[in-house]
Amino acid sequence: MTGPVLQEAAAFAPASVGNLGVGFDILGQAISAVGDTVRIRATDTPQIRIASITGSPTELPTEPERNTATVGLLGMQRELGLPFGMEVSIEKGIPIGAGMGGSAASAVAAVVAANALLDEPLEPARLFAFALAGEAEATGSMHVDNVAPSLYGGIVLSKPSLPSRVTRIPPPAGVSCVVVYPELYIETKNARSVLKDQVPLVTTVEQSYNLAGFIAGCFSGDLDLIRNSLSDVLIEPQRARLIPGFPLVKKAALAGGALGCSISGSGPSVFAWCKKDDVQRVAEDMVAAFAGEDVAARYWISPAAAEGARLVDPS
Amino acid sequence: MTGPVLQEAAAFAPASVGNLGVGFDILGQAISAVGDTVRIRATDTPQIRIASITGSPTELPTEPERNTATVGLLGMQRELGLPFGMEVSIEKGIPIGAGMGGSAASAVAAVVAANALLDEPLEPARLFAFALAGEAEATGSMHVDNVAPSLYGGIVLSKPSLPSRVTRIPPPAGVSCVVVYPELYIETKNARSVLKDQVPLVTTVEQSYNLAGFIAGCFSGDLDLIRNSLSDVLIEPQRARLIPGFPLVKKAALAGGALGCSISGSGPSVFAWCKKDDVQRVAEDMVAAFAGEDVAARYWISPAAAEGARLVDPS
Image (cartoon, rainbow over all chains, first blue to last red; front, top):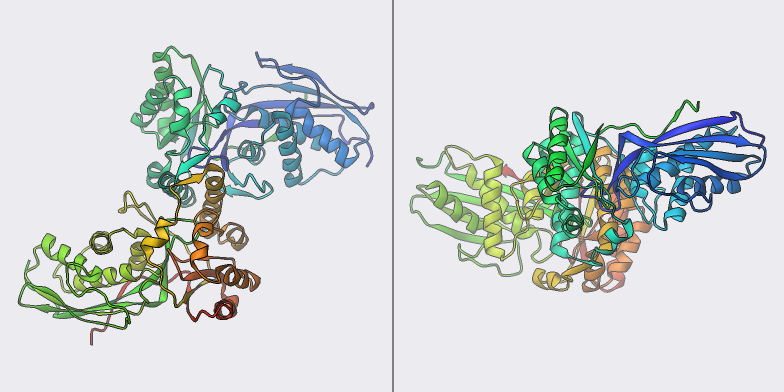
């Protein structure tokens, strides 16, 4: 392999809603309105180093072995025997610890940008594997339900124990998703530790109906079926108490016509699926409900058929 | 409401595979090759009585209040104020206690036949409600995952806690299902009592991936996805020991190219999904595997797109 074709490249990777309410650890959706951007400049020296991290008020590791953006790049460099190094600039558009797949987006943006520097670009499946391994190593847990939609866009079903198996679920027409981020910090590890190891069989039956109905509703474009299915009876009841005001925010979303509303990833962000015409109003109602609990919140709106990661102008 | 339009009617309702491996209590599939037939003759006296039960070596209740075929009819008569009685003949094609939805099929066949005697026939949704209530009352538990496919045909998703919600899942083209019945008797109640009330979260995640992949595979006609998803990691491991030879039978099915193989309903019947060209051979291999354990077995083959209940010539 020879030197890089381009000297510089940049990629944007969107945020994502992990779990999507009914698909704990297996379903995720891209949120194109917000994401991370990673710029990479090829260098003659073999080192991979982080030149800058901007946009995030929270400190992120700047050691390449610990940052989710660069761990995947180290894997690419090692496995592909790349003869060049990289200087990496990370622009965090996604709030840290929001439950919006920020670490996944940085990992995805990094490998997509690096791919543009290769003389033989890789298939998406290989980029996916590098991003996933990088994200898993850097964060200590694997968020395939964030990495997959951030790379591929739209709604993605994946299997945590065999992540190479990725299935695109067709986003129903006329549906938008709003993600509301209350400016609170929840450690993903804590959000996971509240979950019980064992769940009642009767609850899994109800949740599995909801999942199956949701998938069927996406394929058939049946919004009534989605409205009747997009309800998390398994995880949300265990995590809701970590998010101040969650019951009121959800109530506001559903009262405003949302098809469903639940926690984005491990929270504290909350998402709602809406008919396109309702989404702006629902978003504002959800923010107002948080405000009623003295919690400041921001929102982003994305079509259900959101675009995945893409190259952007590096300048 | 006046007297019956016809004096006599008969209906056939197919057997069904409850659970379909990945959809415990929510998914079921019609098996058109075998079913129960119910003949009804309208009578001037208001009584509903069972004239005969044929085809079954096992005794079934002949009191109308206890037989699954007639409890639904009593409900219809009561609720619709029918001015006539019925003499009911039940021909059991489905073995009793096989896990093939026999009680559901009798209940469905009865209401479909009775419907033909009404001057204003009912919508399928109302017939479904009568059959379901009848089956539930007669058997002491509700098998919506058998009643729904037996009435509607094909593959049906339904919600036990809200059974009026029925969603047809499109059967993938080129797929057949074989059901193999080992001539053993398992009380459904016992098969249910072996199930643990609590299940590990990690198992529900894997099973929910399998369910979502299976539904997506049916909609997209992706047989590889179905092959990778049609695996019951939740219920089958708990019930398999009730069926002598099950591991060998499953192994034979998969070795013969089956897309998946699991327990039909609460067993002891075993089903396998196959490509059409493989199904006959797989069926014979499964019967041979049972025979190797000294268990006599019979099989039926049905297209995945099996027809539901239908009127037949009453003569």
